[in-house]
Length: 450
Image (cartoon, rainbow, N blue to C red; front, side, top):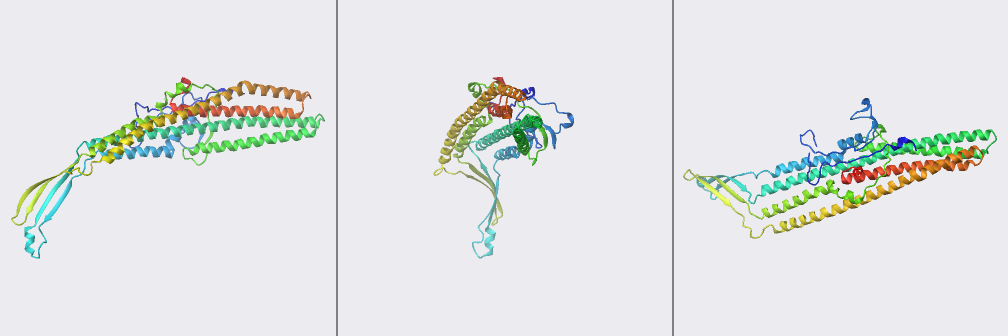
């Protein structure tokens, strides 16, 4: 295997938010922000010339950082989650408003008789009525709305993390397809050289024409595999570009190489960092929100006051008097017991959901670590035990064929075995990197720290 394949490829998806501190900010044109840091950890990327470093439009060489940044900046799912924060902020602002006063106009003692003089005894009243909320309802409503906004921030970070993970895995697919195209290109070159060598031997009368047919079939098969892999690469590039809204690939090459790492940290050392995951961290705010809603429902059981004050005009003697009123609902039939019971159940449900989410994330982590372990085991075996033997067998068979000790079938089988192993090794590296992305997205840390 060429030394160039040993360059390590890594991705770390770092969560700025944690269970203890929730960053609810992403700078936009409206002035408020959501901080969510997603960065490449020990990413081995080629140096990109300044002339090719463009933020928008077509890029010749796309790095992992470019792919993630473009996805987070232009993916509609991320934009929708951001807009939900704005909507929750509007609801939070609205929840802090006091009830509006009411203007009440009344005319009494008119129209009861056909005698028009009865209008002279009409009474006209103008008063202002204000609802006074008791039990700190406005404060408790605002508290619940603030936690609603905080939850929207957590959901935004969750979507960002998911999209960054998808973008990183799609980038790995592009890198893998690129490397497979290179390997199959070498396969085509060697198959053509073998065909030319067999052709010379046939013309010299040292080999049967049947061997030339076999060499032609092997060369044609290699070309077909190369064309199919090129098609797969084009598809992977379009799939990656679609994440930021491009309808066709808007870059030429993915800049980077698949790594050669094979380390697998223990599950016990990883699972203590699950609290970094916003899917789990959000439940702390969710439980607090349900508790705030329960407090609000208790407050709603306290009747509100309606007070009024105004003036009354007596047309009969053209006099004026001040009036005042107080209305107090009597909680005889409705004490809001049903809504209080529902809020208590939803609070208990949120606590259970938090535990269920932790268990679900732990299952995801177990699966991801298992995939990482399988890929690492396969990668190590292919690199250490299989590829050297396959390469040695091919070299010896080729030498033996040139010396007339083996027929062409042995050479073609050994040649195909070498390239099959090289392709399997590439696939194992890709599976390792994709599993690594999953693990690091779940815990928010670089697995090389363990």
